[in-house]
Length: 382
Image (cartoon, rainbow, N blue to C red; front, side, top):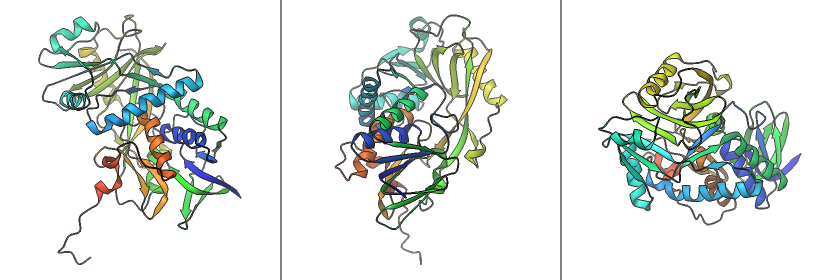
């Protein structure tokens, strides 16, 4: 029997960052994953993720992003690696859409600098990008991208150097609690701990059966296109376009594959994340090609790579970060809804504070489970 202060189930972005944070805080920590991390089986792979501060989803995320930026910088200093690349982010959309008003709301509330660019001037300022005259562009200089696999590997290596233990078992972990501690079964072994962190992404539902919420898992595609033009390399920004056909985002060329592009909307339902279909969706690829032809016209239509990942969407597509009902020594993060990777350092700090019953210095009330509580119907007999 092996006993730890804390067990972390799941070694994606949030799990690996939490493993590092807890081990660095002096706890004896075991991290468990079904696959050798970093891997391509879940949501934390695919070369790059956008990081930004003027958050169109909600202004309340911005304080978490300030903490996350500092956390990424700290991780770079610890590992002597370049993980955060602030190449800027070009966001383009209609003035009455969701993107531009959302970005402006966060920027206004938190005094974040943005450059506003009329649609007709986008091509002049950013050669290789085109937009209609009636839309507007917003450029966030502090934004950019993170290196995904390198970041997870860095967190896990730092966590192990701090004394944490990493275990890879092919079978899903199971847990139970008697109210005082937790018992975790994984790979034919049994482990005990005072506290538990659940950060299992698309595998969350079976581990959180007591939560009366629906977590919807969808399959998402990312595509790489050859950069034969020579543009879209060094000096080119990350980009996000809200269009009637989809919400498309992409990255400058980072390796020989060219640029990476995807559609943030939609996705095909996944019933079993262990059986994720890696095949190409031709309709999705055709939408991407049509978007590129109109808005990124100098890129090649020649595909060089394709990958799939999963979004685990909460009912309102905001994160869920809280203690498990009835078991305050169990903390979980789920429902990151396709925009959680960048927050890993901040959410790891929140998890560490929750685990050690510390005062929370980051505002997470808007991410609590309580927002899904259904008010009691006074006319109900139940």
